[in-house]
Structure formats: structure tokens, C-alpha cells
Length: 596
Image 1 (spheres, one colour):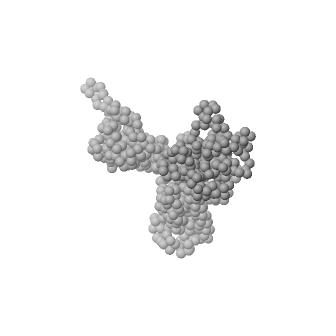
Image 2 (cartoon, rainbow, N blue to C red):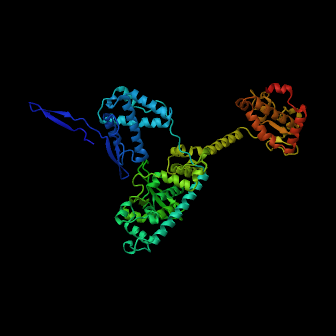
């Protein structure tokens, strides 16, 4: 990038010199370092070079190991895509000569409209795109010392004009999916270890093929162990073809981890630890330390962490089915590749270009993930909603967290390890996989609150002991049919919890007895209760659901869930049969008038 503030001076006849600023030319191609790997951003193919240069300079200022966006993918690469989309749109609207001072609020609003048509009004990506563009315009205006119009300055105070919904958090997989994926990954890890151990043992029996010949596989493996993996260039030098043994990749894979081995190792590690995929990929060969009491300290980097990047967790040791045991196995299997390549990465092995740390640069595993899922038929498993499972390592981590959340019974204080309470609640607890348990918790809470406010109905079937909460006076009132109020016996008609004035008569409709602590239900009330139950069923069909629930919902719940089940089944069945056969058991006309 050109230095800022460069000037040349032109002398006049009097010897005085007036500074003439040289226009600052920003970059259209620039390079930044992400995790020690240099990445080049080339925007020279875009139109509007006078606009691209300041925006590219602004973009370069926020990325790389020294910027605020320290990951290439998806972080910085996503910002590059946002900039490209905006510049392409602007070139179509204003032409190739557009520059920073040509930006207007209307242009940003039009860009938002285009995004809304693409993603939907208020969709999350609309806000993300505009946030990037607005941020770059602010930085560019400041760096260029441009006096932007007041109305544009005001427009740069916010991103999208429409309220954009935040992106929904990733959902967890069903727990049986996690179990199946974990089992398949650990089985593959055991197979990888057996393959490498067998290959290295065979290489130990080989000799230099330059002297002993290339026909024996052990000699070829000896050569790879001593001189590194076979590549296309090396085989041309040797004037030798590896087709006899299934190709160079097949031979290299006998001694070193290859790209296909990364998927089961990473899947198994995430299933065992709940590490974020980017953290699992970035582990170093010396990530384990401080063994004590069957546990090790695992050190990892979290690029998106707000307070530094180094983090640790304690992990259990043991077999390769434990976190520390799996990592120790990976360290052992990849140690020769690290020593030969000079990489410190845990995931070091043989690529087509030789030995390297697979994730020291940008390495995508989409093809390998799809192939691995298909090989184990994991893509035939059923996801939430009935669709087929597609493996996303982030969702795998979310499922591990979900299991811990369920094990903790939804108690955030037992679940927030590694997160703030807010993040744990919004991103890991409030997900679709937990909707059912949350709804059950709400239902249970409401039932508990209702039980406190409204005790269960008092039912005394013939021959049963009366509830201990009834006083002798109340029991005497219950035994007298003179205190019956059609559906129940009332222990104190003039001491109703619903009375408008103390001592006044009960004012509620007859089904209010089902909600009243003064009501006691006995066998002689069964015909009325059964008839009222039949009436409620008829009303459910006649009224809309909302109206029926508002009018009769609680009464029916108390009747069907508390009163009727308290009677012996044979008596209840007899009462229903009698009600069906005898019209005299129907509700009286006067009562029907009150009900309807």
C-alpha cells in the first residue's frame, strides 16, 4: 500500500515551496496473514476502481493476525464477498467512474432492497451484508479525509433500515444420531491406528529399494519412511510407477495420516470433548500437559474469543475412547510427519504435495465428509423434522452441549462452562432440540402453581375414608343431600371463596363447583357428573376451540383429570351406562338454560 501523506513540492520564482498532496492510491490486491498463512485478496476484476481502492484499504485494515477479524474462513472471506457484491451493484447503478463521494443514502437503501428480494425482507443475511458495507464506508471516509454529505453520515449510523431477524442458532442432532456418528468415528480411528502400525512394522522389515528392488512393498515403504511421501515429482525422478500397489496415496497412507483420516478423528474428538471445530482443527502436537488424577490439561486456541486466544480444559485419560486417550493416539500417529515437516500441528500427515500440517493453511473437508457419511450409511439417519442427516461439525458440538444441558436438568449454572450465562442460554439452551423439554417444564410449573392456588378436588366414594382436611362440620354437611348443588355437596354455601361480600351466597355457575375448595363429590353425584361430562363433550363440538377452552377448559380438566378418576372404575362405568339408557339422568332444562 502507498504511504499516507506523501507530498511533492514545486518551487516558485521567489524560492517558496507550496505542498501539493499526491492522491493516495489504495490497493486492489493485498495480502494478509491468517494463523501464519498468507492469503491474497484480488479485487482487480471489479469495476469502479476509484471506489474499490478506499474500500479495499478499509477491508485490509480490519483483517489478518493483527486485525479484528483473525480467521480467513468464514470470517474475512465473508467480508470480501460482501464487498464484491456491493461494488458490483454500485457499478451497475452509477457506472465504472463511481467513487466514495458518490455514495448516497438512496444507494444503500436500493442495495438493501436488492438483498431483501434475494434473502427475504428482514432476513439475517441482509443485516450482515449491510453491516459490513457500512463499516467499510465509515473507515474509508475517515482514512480518505472525505467530507461525506450530512445525510450519508446519518445513514452510516445504522445498517439495515428494516429490522433484521438474528440468525437462528444451529439446532442439535437427535441424541441417537450423535451416538451412531460417534461409534462410527471411533471404529474408524481404531482401524486407522491398526493400518499405520502395520505399515510401519512392515517398513521396518524393508531395505533400500535402490539396491534391493522396488518389487517388494516393504522396500517401497522403507523408502517412504526414510525419504518422505511419494509425490508425482518424486516418482518422475525415480522413474517408477506406483500403480502396482494402488497408487502413491495408498502407499503413503500406510505410514502417515491422510486427508480421509481427518474426518473420523475430528468427529470423534468433537463428540468426546465438545470442542468447536475450528479449535479442534487448530490443536498443536503439545496440546496435552499436566497429567493428574486420570486427567490432562488440553490447551487450544479460540480465535473468536474476546479475552485472548488461549484456553484450556481438563479431559479424562484412558483408552482412545476418552478425550486424552484419543489425542495421545493422534500425537503418536502423527509424530513422524511433524518431525519430518517441521510443523507443530497435531493434524500432520501426507498430502499430494508431501508432508504438512493439514490445517496450517485453508483445508476444506466437504468431499471427505460426504464420502464418510455415505460409507457408514449415516446419511440415512433421520434428523429433526424427518429429513436426512447432513453432517455439520458445528451441530455435532451443539449436540454434545445439548446432552450436557439435558443431564444438568436445564440448570444453567451447571451448564455454562466455557460460556457466559447469556451465550449458554441463547445459543445452546434455546434450540429446537430442547423445545419439548422446555414445554414440559413450563407445563409442570403451571401445574404446580395451579396446585398451590387450587387444591385437588375432594372426592369421597362410598366406603372410602374421607380426606383428612375436612372438619367434622364439613363432613356432616357432605352427608346431607340438603347441601347438594347438583354437581357436588357444598360444605359452606355462604362462605364461598367467590362471594362478592363476606357471608354472601355463592354466585358462580354450577360448574364452578369443580374449581371450588368447598365442593365434595360423592357417589350420589355421579349421575350429574357423568351427564355434565357428556354435555361438555357436546359443547366441544358446537363451540370453537378457543371459546370452549375459555369457558369450560379448567372445569373439564378438573372433572376428567381429578373427579371422575377418583371413583372406582366399575361404578363410573355403571353410571355412564345408566346415563345412556335413562333420559332422566340428563341435565335439567333449567340447568341447561344457565349453562348455555
